[in-house]
Length: 258
Ligand code: ADP
Image 1: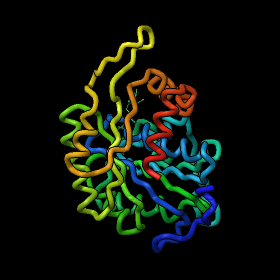
Image 2: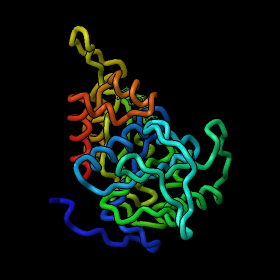
Image 3: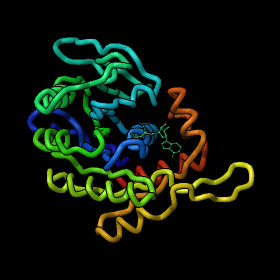
Image 4: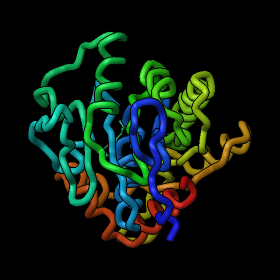
């Protein structure tokens, strides 16, 4: 299969992975964490060894989306990730109280990110998916200095303001020499479950147009879906894959990325 090639160490930190994929956005609330976790789940369901690192240190939401909690153990100097089924997950959310704000500045941020990567026992991975903090370049810079990233996926909604922020994110990744894999449109229209009529709540197609305009690949779109919102509020994002439309959209996006 496509996963047969053994993972090799990448970067100077001995992380064994075939490919590291960052998921970013220009601003918060566009579904970046939902997308990062879904890509990891989709790859994992397809039989790949995947790790999920929540580098959104100011607003770690991955533990919540996957219903994970607890304190990671340290064994032989390595932080043991918390598992969602086969998927090892590491997040700042496991290290701070849920209602506690993270007020770290640059140097500490750099330290926490490099520790996440270097000191977590990931094991050999096919893919490491990283949920980036929205907007700023600090974490991207730290990562790009530590490991060669396969590239970054930029998530945005079809709204004009979100698209402008997404373009800033693209230019931020380019400045930090992280290749941009392409753009994903989230909350792309809404199909009414009762009448089947489509309502383009935030618009639709804007990200595809922008991607073409700035000459980056368009990787696909995920509509607004009640099940995604409801299930992730309950910590069951994976259940959204039971909806065939959602699953098809997420698997298609994932295939366009890897
Ligand atoms: P970000 O990481 O960009 O801040 P999140 O992934 O945390 O955004 O998503 C923000 C909120 O929007 C969450 O409540 C999530 O469940 C919801 N959401 C994300 N994508 C969708 C979608 N396609 N349909 C419905 N709700 C969504």
